[in-house]
Length: 136
Image (cartoon, rainbow, N blue to C red):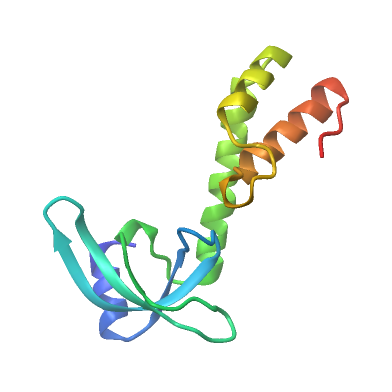
């Protein structure tokens, strides 16, 4: 979202969406103010909305580029980013050696909040497509 759109959403008291830093889930919020930090730059201070669509609570600072006008727009951006990252991973892994090196430098095991789920799925796809391996 650009600054003018953020200001418009704030004036109109319209909700915005962003990806929760720890939960990796969509979060619905209202913009309470626009802030400027000399190190961080401009961002929106938002208050999370706890309702049927979202169960987040509290307030946070969110960069304008990380705000979306709808949950659908956020979900599309998340999907596009996952597809871009998957393609990048697949391009970087050409051999089994590459795959093993990749797995040793990325958390593709089930490690709760530390798991890189996009990388895990990409490695699973590569292993199945190229070597017939079913990785669980």
